[in-house]
Structures are given as C-alpha cells and as structure tokens.
Length: 219
Image 1 (tube, rainbow, N blue to C red):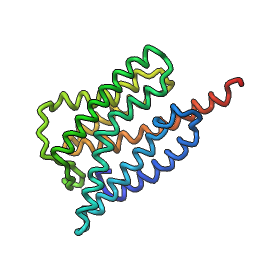
Image 2: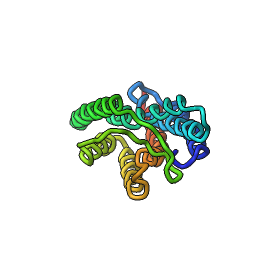
Image 3: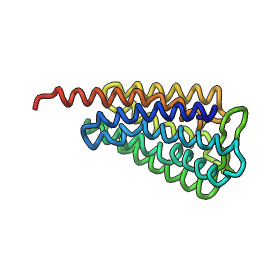
C-alpha cells in the first residue's frame, strides 16, 4: 500500500489467502468476477510493494514504470468496469438488473475515458511524506465531476444489488473513500485502494453464504 513495501506485501499475502478461499466457494460462473475481487486487491498490493522497492533502489526505472502502470490501470480502468459488471452478473431481479446495466455502461465509459487520458498524458509515481503519490501531466477539466461519476459506478451498484450483505461492501467503500479523502487527499488513489481492500472479507462472506444456500437447497 502507500505506506511501505512491508505493509504492501503483508496485505498482498493476506488478500491472496482470502482470495483463494473465496474462489474455492464459487459454484457458478456468474460469481467468478465478484469472487475475484480479493485476488484483484492482492495483485494491487503486490504491485505497490514492488514499486516501493524499485523507488528506493536506483537502476530499476523500467520496472518502476511497469508497476506504476499496472496499479493505475487496475485502479482507474479495470475497477470502474469490474464492480458494476460483477454485481450485474450476480443480480437476478429484473428491475435491479436493468439499473445495473445502465451503471455498467457508464462504468465502461469511465474506464475508456481514463484509458485515453492515461495513453495521452502518462503517469509516474513518487514518494511524498511516506506515501506513494501518482502524478500525471493530465489537466482534467472535469475535475470533481469525474471523481463523482467514478464513485457512482464503483459504489452505487453495490447498493442497488439485492444480494444479502452486499450493502455492507458499499458502506465500507464509502467510509474508506471518506477517510482517504479527509486524511490522505494527496495520495487518494493509493490509500483508498488499500482501505477498500477490506471489502475482500465481505466478498468472502457473501460468496460463502451463497455457497451454503446452494448446497442446502433441495435437489
């Protein structure tokens, strides 16, 4: 995470364990993307751990660039499409599914926009006050509006879902963003991804509950 290499690798190992156990509980294809969220966060944390090491040792500029892009692509391009898609696939209520399809469409637009901005302006990481900060030459005229839309497609789908305990994920993510924005605004992307990783445990319990219901249901 944004605090140290050791913290990133520790979080990565823990999330790998949670992710492995979550994927073991999958019993139908529609759960795969949602169940993969802990593994997604594990890869993010390992990426930042390696990034920390490359930034504190000279001669690894190429590797540093690779893992900077890996982290940003996951956070700003994959995530806004992954969340609405994963919840959409799980949903069985027709009305809610239509709402989720709309949020998914917006999420794909957000991901495409961020990809385009990344290609044009690039990104680099630097250490500032014991935190990792991702910088770019990008001058985003959308500003706060872009951030609000990003939050909408990554948090609202969770509240729209009819799946049991799903709302817990939304509350955790909203609180994680609030804490990150209030205390760590300069390194918001990195810190929010770390705190949001806490939802991995809620993901495990949701998949586990579905797994239990599947095996308890009459043949």
